[in-house]
Length: 520
Image (cartoon, rainbow, N blue to C red):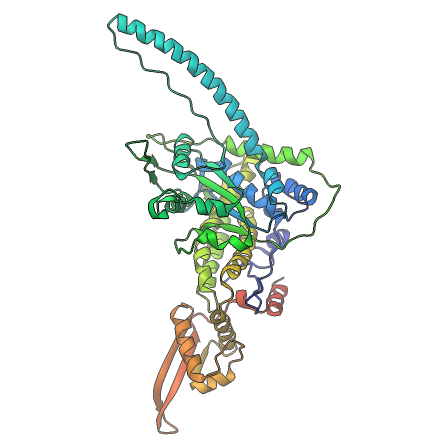
């Protein structure tokens, strides 16, 4: 497929490949290489703080940047959506998770990213306290007015409405309470959990058999889908027409399986993971400047102050952000290539879940970057997605793809079938995309460390691989051999699209490096 990414844009952003394919080693116990976080792709108002905080704290930049994405997404909330086409719109919600051992400086990095939301919450609390004092005064007046009305034989006046405290962030709460907070804060909130393992364990802990609707709430909230939560204290369910929750937390590698809880419900696939290599850190004289903190706080404030329209029922009616023609062409190209990767021989089947969610995340990252750029620019800049926003999102997408591979290899190990399929794809590409011959010939000619020793087992294994790989066709059986005048067994293996087949994501490190060098 022709790429619509202009080389100059890609070079400026540090991109070496539009697909960002990350190499996977042949050792099933060894994790794929962790891609470096592309700081230059983040909103301009946050870049300096990411770099300074990482240097001052002694942590990878993504420890600051990933929670920043969740925080900035919550500031946008339900005020904006990206319209990709009729029937497909994406909000800005991000579920982010840092994977690291204890002592890796996750907490101080999170504190930096959360600071604007905490300060905004403090201001909202102060405003609420003033409203509460006013409400108490109104209640006293109401009691007097009610007595006067009773003496006069008149109906009592309506009581004053109790104020609610607007929220920017939530830390430890139940789904029932979070639904209530959502109803009171239609713009949305960011939920912070220092330990996501505790968040996962707490789900449905009060439900009979531990199988309630908590996980379903988080699945629906990720896509801004209607949720209804029943509460014991209320006769009617609490309905949130358009929930908006950004979520961020950290988890240790050893307890990562608890996040999935052994269920194939897609919750794990909804996370953007950062799983960097551990860094050696010690004392540094580096500090975070006030200018860097101020720029990030200003960006957060501008996003939070974006107008959020409402419909006739009082529910959010987000402003729809559109793509420029050039931006749409690049977006279409990237989404098509995501699908090609999923269908290519050698693509690990366990990655199809997160890859399918990356389509939505690609749009969400674009929305955050474009909205932040417009908000941080001079007055009058149109809120429209430009080509540079999409290209920056490509770099972030590549980063998260690489780290998703690390996470799923850490959880499940490598899949030998994926390596065999990748080797078969390379073998077929060298032959014009097709092999047609005897099973023994295929076994002898195919060079792979993952092929079985017996010819019949290879045939059986390839048949199973082809059945779940849209990009690979397989036939086997008997046919008449004119020269020998008898029937002979045959196999025919072919790439459905020989020009784009194969999967560099399962290449050996040296091969992947050669490809990347060739793409520069």
